[in-house]
Amino acid sequence: MLLGLVVLVVASFVSLDLQWAAFLGPQALGDMGRFVGGFFPPETAPGFLAKTGWALLETLAMSALGTALAVVGGLLLALPAAGRGVTRAAARLVLNALRSVPELVWAVQLLILAGLGPLPGTLALALHTSGVLGRLFAESFENAPPDAALALRQRGVGAVRVWLFATLPQTLPQLASYTLYRWENNIRAASVMGVVGAGGLGQMLSYHLGLFQMHETCTVLAAMMLLVALVDALSWRLRQGLTR
Image (cartoon, rainbow, N blue to C red):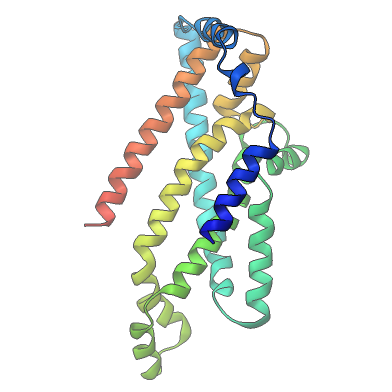
């Protein structure tokens, strides 16, 4: 396995035309420095900052609602996916289909139905993340220690109550950790999805960058980095609380 991975990496370097000399050459570095310098200073007009702040809140709301919907969808699909027989195969097929389509593609398709704005972006996050969380949740249920569930079954407890009182409590910290991690990812995805008209900071980024308004673009990028840092810190605190 390890040898095959090494061969694959070496073959990738050989087959790809990676022009490192041109990329790291003096002219390329100089052009990049001038391009980055054009972003500064950022736009700090009160009206624009207020507009950026509202877009930041919209992006945060898209990611939070999309993740919450995905938790529900993922759980509904994870239960049959962790079972046996035809229902397991069907649920796994649906999960594969949901997560194999990128969020941007889901957003483009949903724009046709819902129009421009945060709704298609939120639904796109929910659909893709349902596939990811459903797969992770199903594996958590399958790998849960069976002793508690077996003890309840031997006492005649039904399947639903076995899952509620045995499987779920054992896997809940892991489910929460997966959910928080995907929420962090969805913050970044929501920021990018605005590029196709799905609202939030991404839509502002696409607009101002397309018009080469670099100072406004710098402010939007700073808002994106601030949002990701805040959510990352909040997620870390929540995960620390779960592990105590």
